[in-house]
Each structure stands twice: as C-alpha cells, then as structure tokens.
Image 1 (tube, helix red, strand yellow):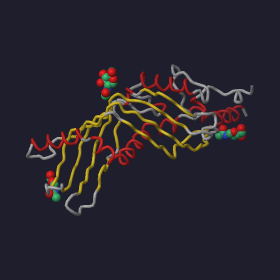
Image 2: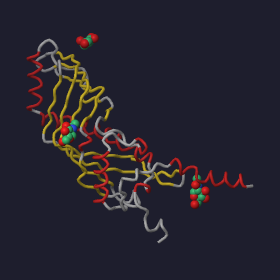
Image 3: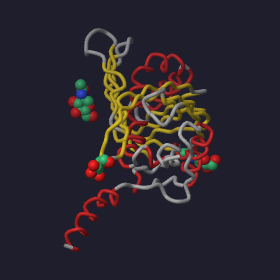
Image 4: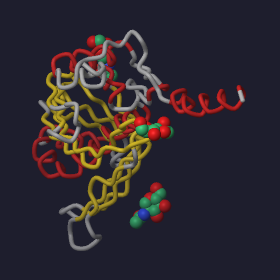
Length: 257
Ligand SMILES: *[C@@H]1O[C@H](CO)[C@@H](O)[C@H](O)[C@H]1NC(C)=O
Ligand SMILES: *[C@@H]1O[C@H](CO)[C@@H](O)[C@H](O)[C@H]1NC(C)=O
Ligand SMILES: *[C@@H]1O[C@H](CO)[C@@H](O)[C@H](O)[C@H]1NC(C)=O
C-alpha cells in the first residue's frame, strides 16, 4: 500500500524533474515587465557568452549557421551569378545589447512579442563558392575563405508563437519570426575570387565594399531569411526547454491571490 502510494506520488511529480529551471542568479520578471525582461536578457548575454545548455541557450560567441545560398541566378545569358556561403560561423552575438522588448504578457499570444537590439560588429567567417559570368564575359568559378563584417548591426525581431501544453505546463513555439535589420556598413573579403589574379581579386573586393549599399539592397531578402534562421537557431531551444511560465515570477492568479 505504501509502496503503491509512493509510486503514485513519484509518477505525479516525475515530470517536474524534467522541467528545466533558470539558474538562480538570473532575476525573473513579472509578465509584461518589458524593462525588467530586457535587463534580464542583457544579464544573461553578458554573463553566459558560452551559453547555458540546461536551458537550451547555445554559445553566443560562436554561432554556427546553416549554409546559405545568397544568390542563385539561372545559368543563362551574359551575366549570372551564384553565391553560396558554407561552414559559416557568426562571431559577436555575445556583445548584443537588448534595447527594447514588447509583449511577453501572461498570455504569450495576446500581443506581438518583439525584441530590439544592437551588436557593434557581427562577423561571418567561413567558405564561399561563387560561380558566374560577368558582363565583360569573365567566368567566375571561385571558392575560398570569406569574411563579412556587419557594423553597428541593429535588429528587431517580431515573433508569433503558439502555446504547447506538456506536463501541465505551457511552452511556446515560434511559428513566425520576422527580422528587420539595419547596419552602418558591410565590409566583406572574399579570398581568391580570381585565383590567378590577386589584383583583380582586390579590385573586386574593393568594388563590393565601396558599393555595399547596392549589394545590401539587392540581397536583403536573402540576408533577412538567413538571419531569421540564425535567430531561430538561438531562440528555439530555449522555448523548447523552459516552460513559458517558469521564465517569469509567479502571477497573482497562479498564487491564488
Ligand atoms: C565583443 O566586445 C569585446 C569588448 O568590447 C571585444 O573585445 C570583442 O572583440 C567583441 N567581439 C566581437 C566578435 O566583435
Ligand atoms: C570550377 O572549378 C572546379 C575546381 O575548382 C572544377 O572542378 C569545375 O569543373 C569548375 N567548373 C567550371 C564550370 O569551370
Ligand atoms: C494535469 O492537471 C490535471 C488537473 O489539474 C490533473 O488531473 C492531471 O493529472 C495533471 N497531469 C499531469 C501529467 O501532471
């Protein structure tokens, strides 16, 4: 009889052992207290650049990124270009400052969740593959190291989430993340763009850097898609591991007041 009731109690509480709690040093906030929430996010970013695996926070000082097909013209005509970034790592997320938060109410679906922030310098390092034909009929068939630096990277993320119920707790899952990004400058270096002609490689990189605004405008949809996936890579696991309510102080209703 005793064993049996112990078993019942154990089974009832068992899921609790699975639920991930925030480390005690992290100050929790009231639902919707957007100033407190921004402070807490900044505290976590500053103090845990290597992440917190238990709550699904990945290392922020080196974020690996899915391969990106940035430009993918059909191989026709006198000018086409295909450009792919592979094995890329983002450096600099550990220097993010969250500047503003909206939403994060008790009912996570009642208002739009928004996160605003800045990063002094966000760099992208990895390999690139470029294929193409330029107007002056130079064929491009290059691969090499690439490095990109987005300076004064300012972002806003608008999240739409759906609640998911597990073990009587509400978790949230992102179903849409819309980023908006502004930068002061984009500096890029592609090594070996013209493998046998260093001067031309330098000229091409200079052309890019002097006209980065045009490239940014042209590539913005692909860039935003890429960053949407990078930000989801950073955030998704946290929402997966930590129940939404556990991120906040207990509400008055929950305490029966
Ligand atoms: C992050 O900020 C620190 C301190 O300002 C700086 O030394 C470091 O280079 C920055 N990291 C990146 C990747 O920009
Ligand atoms: C491009 O270069 C790679 C090796 O660097 C080679 O295997 C491939 O055949 C080249 N493609 C074209 C279209 O020249
Ligand atoms: C969830 O809560 C309901 C009602 O409070 C309870 O009957 C049920 O046993 C709980 N389920 C779990 C898995 O804790």
